[in-house]
Image (cartoon, rainbow, N blue to C red; front, side, top):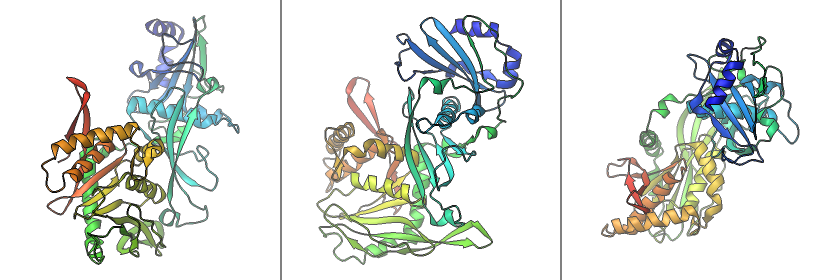
Amino acid sequence: MNYFKKNVATKTDIPATIKKLGFPIWNKISHIKDKNGNSNLLEDSSEILLIPFVRENEEYVNASLIIKTLGNDTSYSFKCDWQYKELVNTLTNKKREKYALLFMYLNKSVFNYDEFKITDSTLFAFNGYTKPELTLRLQTFEYCAEFSVSFLNCPQNYTNCPYQEHWLTIIFTYCWEEDDWIPDGGGGNSGSSSGGVITISNGNSGGSNSNGQNSGWIPIQTIENSQQSPCEVAKNIARQLDTFYEQSRVDSILSTIQGLSTSTVENGFPVFRKYLVNSQNVTDTTFTNYSNGTIHQGTDSNLTYTFTIPSHSVLYFKVHSHPPHRYSAPSVGDLFSLIDARQNEYHYQASIIRAANGNTYALFISDLHSASYFKSAYFQYLESTHWKSESAIGIAFQKAFVYFQEKYKNYLPDGDNKAYEMAFASVLNEFSSGVTLAKIDSNGKFAPIIVTTSTDPRKPKRKIYSIDCQ
């Protein structure tokens, strides 16, 4: 790489490059394989490297030097973020989206941005859908990338859409071919190790200003959340739960269900919240009163809700009970039901569980995009109301459960319930579920339960569990 730096420097108009494209961020080089290669740089017959460029006093990746090595041959090309506009999609290859996603990845690598507002309506377009908002959530980035697109499912002539329709989230996977990494198109500059001087075209300086508005996407800088710990984020959401739990009078409604603590089946009801729309400005919406739906009765391990959302209302949360023979804390089925509800209803807040022993829990989403990926990756390991025992998450849960059983063996009268509760919370955190468990404490307030799992440095096979949010 040092040789390459010197080689490029002798063939590049450095002042023009810095002026138009910015400075190379050498410590953020991405080693990317093409679809037919492998990821080990020393063993690859072919590899692609991405070197991001950032202008002075800007916090946005404007361009990239793309280097391809094949045996002893090296070729390179400067590409700018705006050049996605020059590509043409085919039925089988969404080149424009892949190119845009490449630069979003570079922004994540350099600045840790993972949310982007799409400003070009032709990118990630869906028939009949409007106002798309892309959130990048990469799990791996070798030749395939996973991410999610959230958008309003909204008829184009429906002015009240943001308040009466649903946000939807879809998980996508794109895989790149070689020509996606170094696409054709004007404005790019290329060279090879055998000679030639790299010059930067005077026709375009990169196509984006300080916040990248000409690139077709803008990073959403969630500064407040980025400075908060997971515990602080969870506590803030828990305070909101306290408010709507009290104002919707959940305890009073539960008290009307006769024999709730001894019932052998689940009981529950949905809670709605009304909204008012300013007729002079449909973007001005105010949420007001709560109302609850009919109390439903299910089986010993499941509850199906059937209801019609009242006019000018949204589904806000659901409440259900756990019978005495069940663990008091939420089940794995409850976890995925929460994610489903939140994906289908933008305003959905939480799932509330009242156990037969009197404990009250809440499951809420602290990171929707992590939760969406978690569901796509781990739903296959759901077995009835628990994890499949042979799955990685099932094994992790069982190890945590055994650990907490021993820890709470003298915790009367509900040592096993306490162990289950803590083990459930531990895998939520360990597997980055984007979901938090909370429980009403002795002060009558929801308190988040966040358990961190680490490896004992003296005994690598032993796990250490710590409670991080008190």
